[in-house]
Length: 277
Image 1 (cartoon, rainbow, N blue to C red):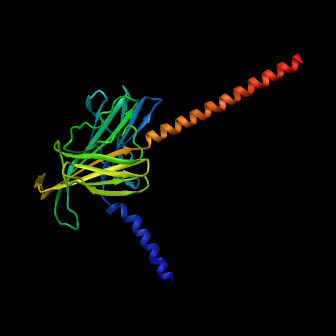
Image 2 (image 1 turned 45 degrees about the vertical axis):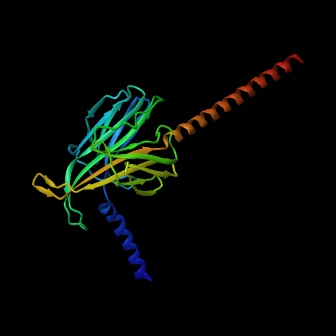
C-alpha cells in the first residue's frame, strides 16, 4: 500500500514538472484597458494560456496594431518578466486589432523525426466604445483566423470564423478552441475555410489553427522538410457580460439612493406635520 502511494506521488510530481515542457507552445496576445489613463496594455506571450508562460527573447517578436481608422503601425516592445509588452493610447473608439509574429525557427518533433519550419502568428481584437467593428477584415499576415461572428456582443453560443492562408480560405486546417474552464474543442475547416464551435462559458477563448505544408528549404544552415503554420486568436467573451454586471450594480445603487431619498422626504414631511399639529 505504501509502495503504491509513493508511486502515485512520484507520478503526480513528474506530471506537474514535465507537462509544461512537453505540451505545445503557442504565441498569443492579451490586452487590458486602463480607463483612467486612456490606454491599452498589450502583452505578447509564448506558452500555453492558463497553464504556463515560457521565457521570450524580445528580439524574436514583432507587434503591430490596426487602429479603428484603419491605420497600422509597428509597436515598440519592452521586456517584462518573461514576456514582451507595449502600450497603446486610446485615441478613438472602435476596434484595435493587434497581431504579433515570432521569428521563424526550425524544430524536429521526437515522434516524427522530420525537421519543420515553424511560423507563428497571434492576433486579438479589442473594442472600445460602440463604433462599427472591422474585426472581419484581414490583417497583413500570411496565416490568420478571422471571426465571422460579431464579437462586439458575443458571450456564449455558436462562434464562427474562417482560416486564411495567403489571403485565401484554407481547407482542412486543424482548429482548436481552449475555453476558460479548460474546455478543449477540436475540428477541421471545411472547403471554404469555415469552422464553428459552441462556446458554453463566457471568458477568454484561445483559438489556434495549424496547417502543415510540404514546403522544404533551409533556414540559416538548417534544412527543413515541411513548413508548419500556426495562428492564434484570443476572443474575450466576458467583456459584454462584465458591462451588464456593471449596469446592474449601477441600477441597484440608483435604487438604494432613491429609497434613501424617499425615506428622507417622508421623515421631513412627518416632522412638519408634527410641528403644525
